[in-house]
Length: 282
Ligand SMILES: NC(=O)c1ccc[n+]([C@@H]2O[C@H](COP(=O)([O-])OP(=O)(O)OC[C@H]3O[C@@H](n4cnc5c(N)ncnc54)[C@H](O)[C@@H]3O)[C@@H](O)[C@H]2O)c1
Figure 1 (cartoon, rainbow, N blue to C red):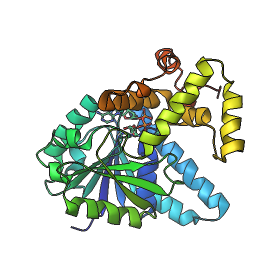
Figure 2: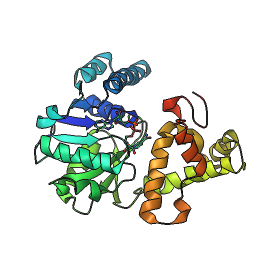
Figure 3: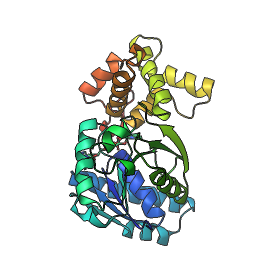
Figure 4: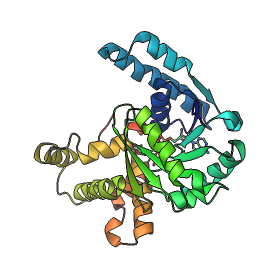
């Protein structure tokens, strides 16, 4: 099957970036979110991001307009009945994803691959909510999607080699590099990244250093392009907490215990960049 039309479900931080890269690469994109304001915001941020490429001279103005014209937004799943591929990017919650995948299974053509952008949740568990577990896989884009080269591809227990090949070919078409990971909590990226971020939050809580000091040590001393607390704000502290919970529950080791300060900040609605307040103010 030739993939021409792609459905993206969830229009938050990740969904809008994923929709953008598919539209830029020539696919017709149907972007779905339960919240109309998120769809309006996504359209604006995609236009702004494409505008930056035009300003830099890496994208022609007519290509920006063509990409925008390929994007349609909607609040229900029924218009996904003729898409050729789906990427899900809703909240990092296993039950929400399983419920959505059961619905997608009903609306989307049976031969179509359903990919999840989950950061940590079991692909096998998500796939088991459908009648096509062989066509469910993880397609973990990095934030910000238009700029980051990596896509982590996750093969669930039942995912077929054919589905993995389709996803891998799509990554190539998008200009991304695919790296395969097995279906264990956090896969490769967040198994390594999130415990470091969590530890940085413990260091703030224990007064080892201020957020500025901790970020400066990792930037200037370890050559990280961004400090872990700046990165946590960028990812979203609610997303960080959800991932730590999956690591802790799934691996059972107390070293993955989410930092109490992270829990407290999320409870206060201090979610980082998207809420205007996190380890830094925005
Ligand atoms: N934030 C990151 O840096 C990052 C990086 C890689 C992967 N991810 C993963 O991507 C996914 C999305 O994360 P995000 O940061 O974009 O979250 P977000 O909170 O910014 O956006 C989630 C969106 O999903 C929508 N939504 C919720 N339930 C829905 C449903 N049933 N149907 C349609 N839309 C629904 C919400 O309205 C919201 O717009 C998560 O699985 C997350 O773990 C996040």
